[in-house]
Image (cartoon, rainbow, N blue to C red; front, side, top):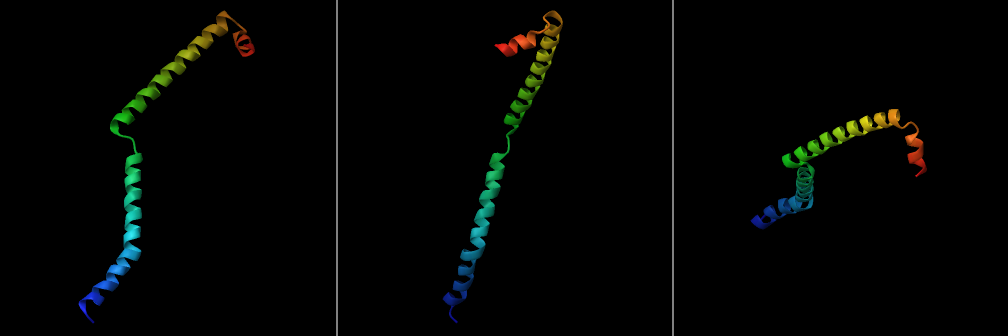
Length: 80
C-alpha cells in the first residue's frame, strides 16, 4: 500500500462523518451563545420590569381612589 491510499481512507471518513457533526455542533453553540442576553441587556430588562411593577402599583392605587370617589366609573369606561 502506498502512502496516498493509507491517508485517503481516514480523510474520506473524516469528511463524511466527523466534519459535518463538528460543524453542526459548532454553529449550534455559536447560535446559543449569541441568543443569550448581554449584561447591559439584562440590566435594562430588570429596570423595565421594576418600572412595570411601579406602574402597576400606581394603577391599582388610582383605581381604588376612583372606586371611592366615582363609583360606577368602570361601567362608564366600558361603554366608551
